[in-house]
Image (cartoon, rainbow, N blue to C red):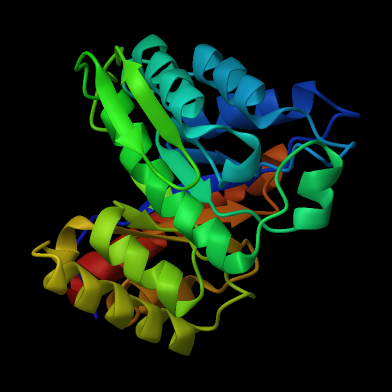
Length: 279
């Protein structure tokens, strides 16, 4: 199950509030070392974390090449029309270097404690599907746009600005209904190793591909992004690409500069060389 995409690497950054400069330092070094992405987890109810969107903006303004994305944005706490505006704005300011990871929401007790809605799992998936439609409408640049959903509405809004490039909407998804939504409506899938095993990746990709085909979409157009740890052996990254369909790896545990340099100099070129040789 190899979709033939170039192998990309990113770094997964913890938005730790006690050391607010550290995430920025990591992003700048990742940019210099040739990483493709910087992903930041989004848990606004976590008192030890900085705000993810503000941090992504600061990162984008201090880098020149690397793409940034929320890994993944907590949708119940970020209304989709406003999120779309923020995403388009940051994409314009960064020269087209923003991607949009989205999640249906995890701990709804914590979400509710900070003022968000208390949704069932089913309702959160409904809301996410509506949000994708709202976000794309808000990027359309059309005037007088209306949308009538159960969770979100637009009542004649003049949309815009349009982003600088076609922003990818990548979903954090594990269950069958969410995986089908990836195939029908999203641009990428973002699971985390640990929550899934390699066999789960095969099954998830099959569900995504089936849903994409049923919707008349090319499954190869959907990115497959995996959050993983730096302790994954080089040969496993190669297998995850060639045998399990993943094309991008966002690596946690690299916030020490020497670890980041080691991964960029030793692991990234070795994986890319092995994949190219096998192909």
